[in-house]
Length: 166
Image (cartoon, rainbow, N blue to C red):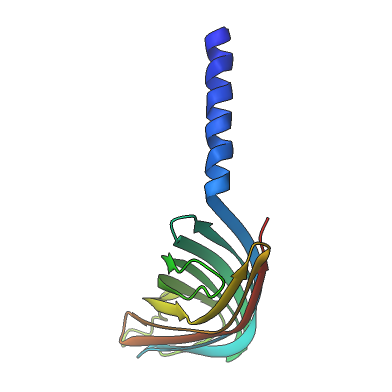
């Protein structure tokens, strides 16, 4: 019994130490996207919500969901992994994977089949105007570009993004 309690205590203390090494920041953003391929076109402006995780070494990850209006109502989900500079001015660069769901303009293939759902693109994203404090961050004009199947090109911009660190 003592060994079990000791193991539980040690695993709990290791988890607490790991939490100090990683800052989790929920955020809101204004978001715009343009996606075009031989078979799918989708674009619009909207809002998003997500979470940003920053390790004390500068390695950063982000997940977000964005609802946008333009070419119908659509949703994008993004997963990003990259590096962020330390300090007050914290620009970063990320590798991204975007998935687009919802309404869009579609071109059927020769057999009359619609394109696969979701449309996707892999790419890069940079955050040149990101500023951090111990309590959160503010970022403007984050830009990204990606490529996907059927000669797809994806362009994205986060006009303004702000988060609070817990």
